[in-house]
Image 1 (tube, rainbow, N blue to C red):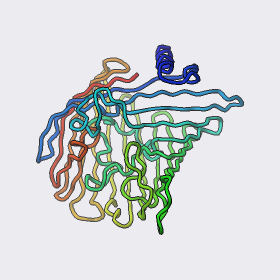
Image 2: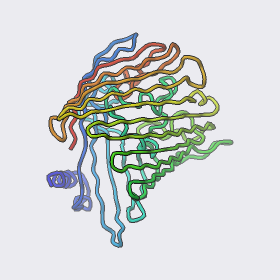
Image 3: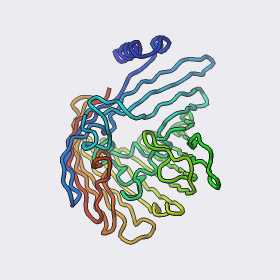
Image 4: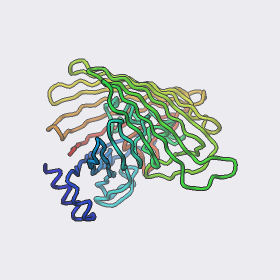
Length: 371
């Protein structure tokens, strides 16, 4: 109830009367701050990271009758620190709200949900719940969805703009998601098509068992494809794709997870070709959750010694249902020619922490609150 009162108060102050009159607006979000020490074998640095998936969001719906309703959401990253460049990959001033997370409008009914705007791709959503270190130094995106620091990491686990997506109803634990990402509103260059992509996933979650599979294809892209908050490339001549499968199982207080991913690309993007697999587990004992993960990426495009191994261990302590303290240690062991860096919050001045052939390791102590 207090969330709705706060949401209406904010709407009254900043929005048009029609928005303020909406009675079912929810405000929600997360603040995730950590203090970290990272060493890449060449440099060693300490910093405070204030945007480990910290965000603020508003969402709501309107009943249109006949089982149909309009749904909408506005969600943005938040940065608590003025020192954005050196403490994370973000820039901004104190209290800055910047960038766009899942922000859309759509229609929902017995057929499922259709939405348009900015949204996580089905490919990204498919295995997100299988990462016990999400939003920390051990985030699995250091190695999954990536092709190493020199090949523009985070190639596939994307949040894309210009997106039209469909989410099916839940059929006894099974659901299906599909998305099409449109290219820039620009004239196509001679001999090339505007960048586009499609992403598909199917998930079964029932009782202790979780199974998922996903596929994503990028058509005629350069380096990045309309990632929210980044430059979109409208034309290109290169294609790339990836598929992955994931599984999870819960036995009492113990959770197990596994992910396998295969990436491919043509032309100069062929350097992304490799397979990655990983295992993780978490055990909850009262307010404590102990967790560990291991993942390995093989050589890029068959070039010898360009892969890496990543592992992480950590513990979470729940101070309440919404507040927890997180302790994480993560390490990326590069092969002799590998250039991979740790993930979430681990960049240096907006760049990578990877160093050729060197191990990258770090400790992180943080606190997370959701509302």
